[in-house]
Length: 109
Image (cartoon, rainbow, N blue to C red; front, side, top):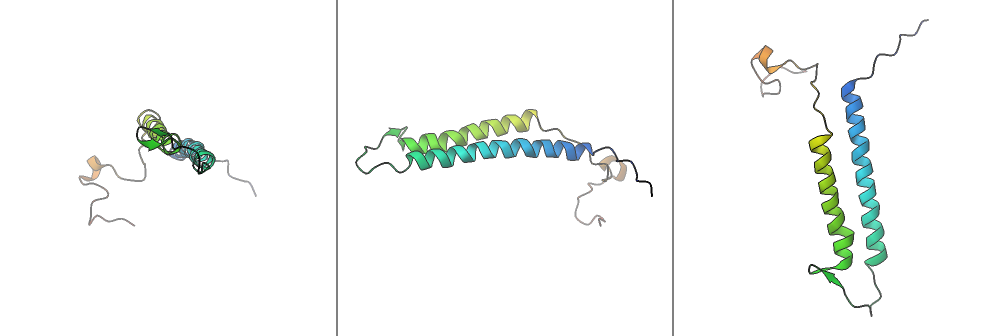
């Protein structure tokens, strides 16, 4: 029996997979940063004086606040510059039907 040739990969799937990999790497880097830094510096010896940065303990500032801001900036940059919109060929266009395809009461299966 002859096999059918592989169809070309769906561009929406390829784009989604690329975006997923980026977000996973961003999340993993910051996860390791937060867990590692807070583990290393979040439990100082009782006799160690508390050092603060902007009114927060330094381990909170460097281990939680900074990674949160950095992850937000990277994610915002990625969302605004790297994520591409692709039309979905399965859905009828709004112009062709005269109504929004996800409008309540429309026929979908």
